Length: 245
Image (cartoon, rainbow, N blue to C red; front, side):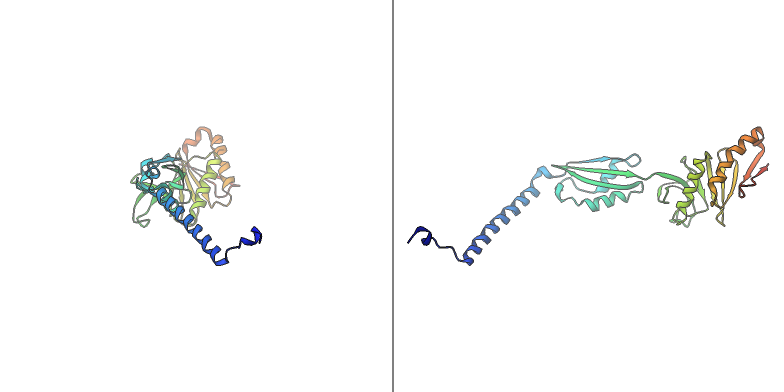
């Protein structure tokens, strides 16, 4: 009988048992390696790097991340930590990433302030003023307006119409009209006050760009007489009216 004939293949059950034993050993090695990695002090969080912040202190962002120093870097839940950072009023987006062996990087982008709103008592049970972004999110509060952005009155920053009012401010700015205050009147008409205390009666904003383009040419045409002007009525842009004091 030849050697090939003498070698018999193991039964299928025996071969499966041997393969299962090998897999069990490999799995145990992987689990043990993962355990050692988790327990290894070299992966314990030692540093949090913050970038992209201008208004929010880095310490506040680190506190919002809320990860203890002895937490293993690979066990830090990045999603919940990012959500806590984004709960800070100024923060728009937060992206967290791991830098082995023990550093966590936090990249943030902050919201852009767009206007100051006068808060009635019905808004969050607080009166005073607030700095808000284009979506009406409150970034800061104060008893008096302490910011350089225009003051918007007559509209709740939580209103669905608020972004449109911010767009109106941008339209005026693009035409070179520096607005100090913008009032939204009960019927939705706009009345603005410039930094020279000139009142602009704008009506609705359906043709706002055209109305805004008339302001500076009218002022230039008036010359010195502009000091006696109280308002420009631009509600009918084809026939603007100069209102004297």
